[in-house]
Length: 229
Image (cartoon, rainbow, N blue to C red; front, side, top):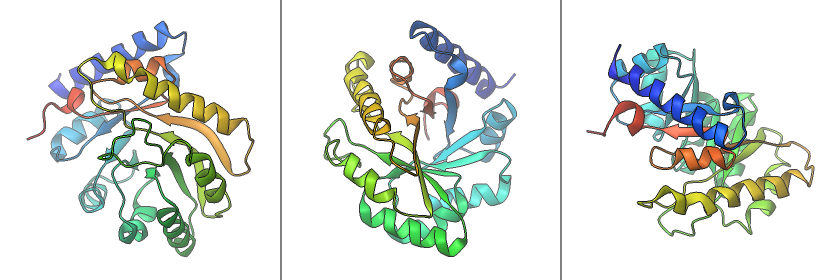
């Protein structure tokens, strides 16, 4: 058994334990393998071990990998997306997690329309208030969602956030709880073309707390593939 396979088993065990603590069914949490800078063979090992979502941060890197490995798994974009890459993103990715501004949404909608696709997106929210992180401020996110909901070639499926890094993952809990509360608030509005199904939150250092707070997709790189080279 490869170290990648062993790591995936351990992460799944930790997800299951966190879900049990919260009274959740662990099948409601999907494990994404984040493959920025990861070699092709190790990505293939992860897919063979059952990873069915691959998360990529860069369009160019993802395009090469998708052409090489095909689309037997879902490919999700999780990085900061430049508007000029929208035309590629709508064709490459099954979901874009990082829609954080109106200009990007408008370009994605235009490019998806030209490609004849409806692009599944998550709205990225900056709950930690860090200037170094992307994401709409929480008080602006509902308005952004109402506007994006009018775009025929985008389908909002939920929210994404990246918590500040803490040496104690418990300190990230308010961020994750805040995203869940925002999701519930928006869901209660019953906005057409908006499905608040997904909460993309939790990474290697804090995913167990995120699962306890309702995450449906955890984005794991180092705990699967080891430290980046």
